[in-house]
Image 1 (cartoon, one colour):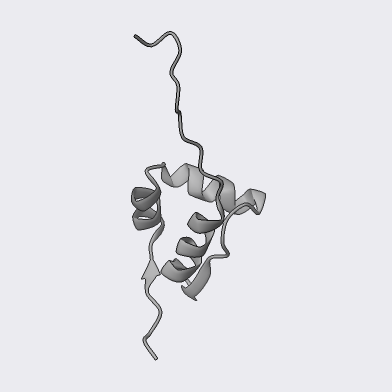
Image 2 (cartoon, rainbow, N blue to C red):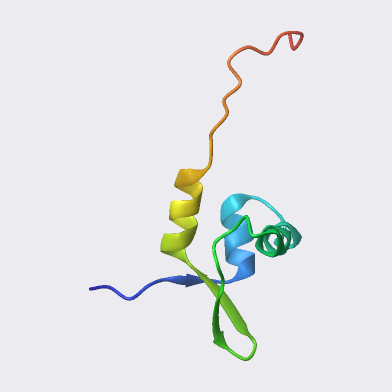
Amino acid sequence: MTSPIYMTVVQVAERLSVSTDSIYRWKRQGDFPMAIKLGAAATRWRLADIEAWEQSRQTCFATDLVGFD
């Protein structure tokens, strides 16, 4: 069994192309995977939890951009 991969808030934000403030806001709102406390000043997210969250999100594709000629 492989060890879980843990990500910092900066790594998670970069992966999702959002700000760290967005990650913390989603966390406060309960709309994001639980963070893991690895120590007094070390909060991390499991990569597997982030991947599962990504897969659960609804994807939207623009198929017709009317007025954008």
